[in-house]
Amino acid sequence: ILAPGLRLGWFHTHPDNIAKIMPSGVLLSGGGPPPVLVEAVTTLMKDGHLREYLDELRRIYASRLGAMVTSLKEEMSDFATFHEPSGGYFLWLKFKKLPAGKDTTQFLEFCRDKGVGFLPGIRTSVDSSSGGDCIRLSFAFYTESEIQSGIRKLAAAWRQFCGA
Image (cartoon, rainbow, N blue to C red; front, top):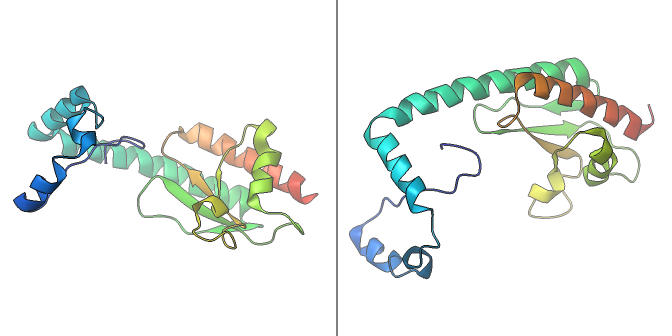
């Protein structure tokens, strides 16, 4: 909940389960989360600053998502659809029609030299027969202006990919 990619959590369970978890080699060997990070987050939580921090993140992410949604409506509504998420870090975009014999994995390869990146939907699907017409876009890492520029580049790349 603190940041994308931060792998730090805690257990809320019955004491009997803690006894089963503690012998794990990952926990005993120090292979778990870095102790300094654990202490910093613990202090953040105990001092009550976690709520303030999360409120600020929500404000930032809402602004970035807003920039993405506005840009997608302006640049891509003719050939793609999406539902605005109510939280998280990602937006799921579905193309209305793909070029014959193509999918979004091939589109990603096409975009490599155009300064555009995304996760093809097929890479998030449990079966490889779905998601080929979708992409996952992140709004967590980039500023509003970077998002707007990225969506313009993505739209231009899609038009080129489709031969339009």
